[in-house]
Image (cartoon, rainbow, N blue to C red; front, side, top):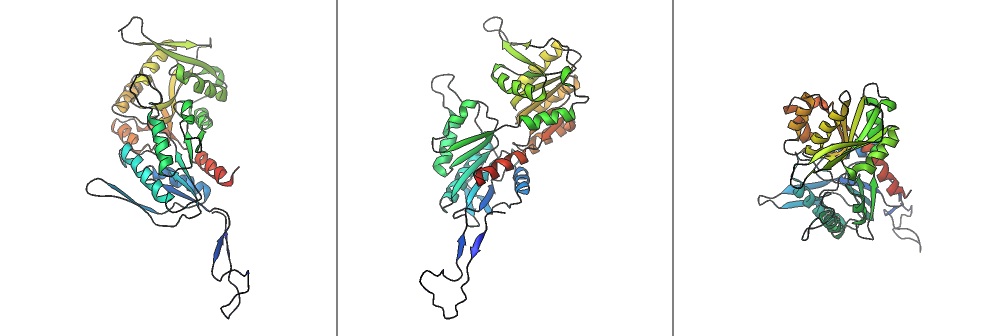
Length: 357
């Protein structure tokens, strides 16, 4: 599972040793053995990652006192280990701020045991949409979050598809942040799950100008045309409208709406309707990296499915989909939620960091 250690057992029977001879029974570590820990949320992803690596999950105990305080206790040594901590949101396991506090306390516990390095794997950086100041007095929350983790003990970060590329610069200078992208995984899923997929009859659609770069990469990956939804207000104070801007003249049979995250799905609802008006005969699908599906998102998806506006929506398991699946099942549309496994992508990043390649 990791670099081995050299066991030395001198054969002298008199209990004495020559100068320079190793002490009996001492294990001399070779390298920095890797170990993966997981916060309570989305343990399914963590188990899939370590299965790819043929490693095991580190032993740690989480408890909550009657007054709500969190207790974390390591149940194995991590001295000189190359430690990886996977922290992924799972709304069935606990509220997001509670989960982040669990992570901070775990990092402090790990740091106190003298590991070689601690790498935090955040498939989705929470508070990602608060990445800039729109008005005076607002905080840049993801920057604060990363600095808190470094203070607690993190040395490096791995994340997946940041909401804003500028967030890669929020980590302190001595703590590297590696961003992975799942566009290849999503593109493969599209090709395999859109019936009769044909690049010449397919367009991808960005939900706004901010997602245009990401969607163009997906278009290049699939070798299809590109279009973009543009939100604007005809007059000040009026309700915003959505118009479609397209650089392709063909009449598409399939349109793939691409976004980095789906939360309440309000924007998706408006964009899908605009796409339907632009291409009435097209089948519409949606793919994204992170699926929150908060509040009445499942109801909105059901409305789009019932109105033949949306065929299905696909997200990765970077965020646990246990809670959304329950919501979709309650609406009778569980089969319209597709989950793309990115555990192999995360495992590959972990092993490359560990080996220094």
